[in-house]
Length: 169
Image (tube, rainbow, N blue to C red; front, side, top):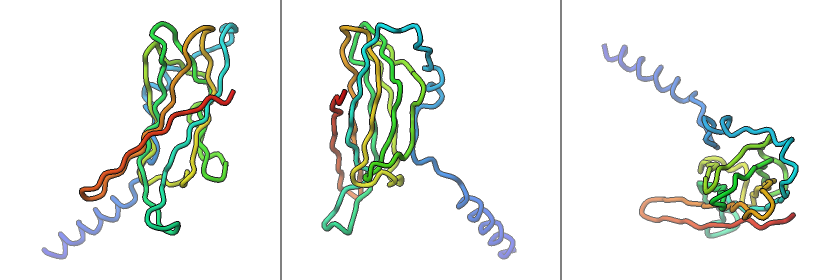
C-alpha cells in the first residue's frame, strides 16, 4: 500500500516539474482589445523614449547578483487625449533584443495605465536591461510616462527602486 502511495507522489512530482512558468507578462487578455489602425491619424506627433530596467543588481561583489521583479508602467498622462504605442522592445545588457511586447499600434485611453511584468526568475535582461518605446500623441497633448519599478524581498529584507524614461526622439 505504501509503495502505491509513493508511486502516486513520484508521478505527481514528475508532472508538476514539467509545468512551464510564464516569466514575463502583459495583460494579454486586453492587449488585443487595444489594437488600432493608425493610417488615418496623420496629425500625430512621433516620439521615442528610453527606459533603463534592472533584472538583476550586483550584491556584495561583481560575482554575485540579486534577481528583481520589474514592473514596466506605461501611462497616458493626458486627461483628454488617447495616445498610441507603436512599438515596445526589451533589450539585454549587451543591446540585444530579448523580446518585443508591442509591434503594431495599440492605444491608451486618457489617464489609462497598463503594465508589463518581468518576473524575478527572468534574468534574460541582466544588470543593464532597457526598453525602447515608440509612440504617437495628438499635437499639443502631453507625452506618455514610462517608469520601471523594481522590487525584491528576501526574508525580512525588502528592496525597491524606480527609474523613469527619457525621451530620445
